[in-house]
Length: 436
Image (tube, rainbow, N blue to C red; front, side):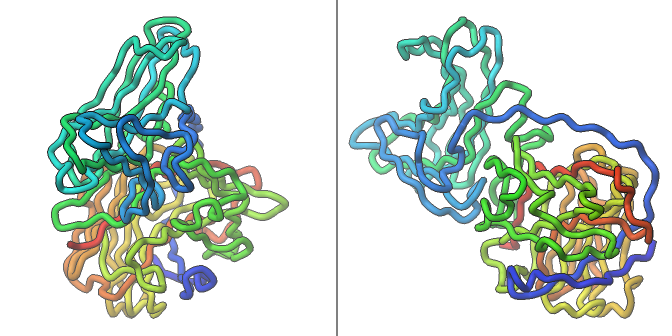
């Protein structure tokens, strides 16, 4: 299928350079699939973005700090051992679950890392604690790891054994020596099966990879109601502004009425309101990017699913900062109508038309969870869908800086969506790496 890029919008108002969006394959019919909401974490301050409220430390000193590549947001908790203590912790007792039902299982998750080289190799535990009304510990459920300078995701599940007990969570470093310090972020505590930290069943990857250095992640652990995105997370996200038309001109970007974050998922609710077909495009603000939001190369990963909403599509793309198209190419993956299958397109460097491209297709539909990865490095572009490489090109790969746009809009059939067509596009997590 030949595809082209046909329109420009106003990212200039957000990052000083406008963007252009891309087009998509033809649709295929499929019935909508309903999705269920996951249960929310009880942790009220999981990522320390404003302060350390709700947290304390036993035998340690608690602070917060900005951290490039933080698992969620820009800040993490730093806990440093006090004096000669050999154990110290980060405690979340203020976010406990009192009178937890007997027989109910709970899951806690956290990201942990060594805060300095002297702490590397030391044991660390994420602990789910059941205690009585007076605070005495009855039982501990633990997940153990060895600390490294990269964040690791720990998960532990336990079942309440006695009626009336309280459940809380804490992180403990053992075998500590003077100067040891740990970093902790994105802590959750929820009924087992809620999936708030990984509702898709696949956790967000955290840390560097061979040849790649991680620079951006978002696991969407901070709830943001409709109408407050991106203001509530403006350090990490921008949007196409309310009122701008999408590629087909049949849809209107309306993040204030479309985008929210809840239960570990960024959600775009596509619908028609007052005769307007409302869509949204979100743009991560990646540390180290240029003034246009672009990078010269990168590895971009997104975990997603969508209802099969007729008349709507995704075009999640890398667009050249130069705005010179088709000369400077374009990279689109995943791409496709929501009631069709997932495809991808690499528009070639020095292209002469919209059809000067390499295409990849799959039989995968949007109604199941998928992980799509663009690996774009000098002289090479790969598309990876659920671990399988579906495109690998080394000829005429785009070579100028590009910025990432998760653009969701009306399809290009020429016919507007029906007013009753509505559904959700869900993103569990995103992660970005740059070449080392």
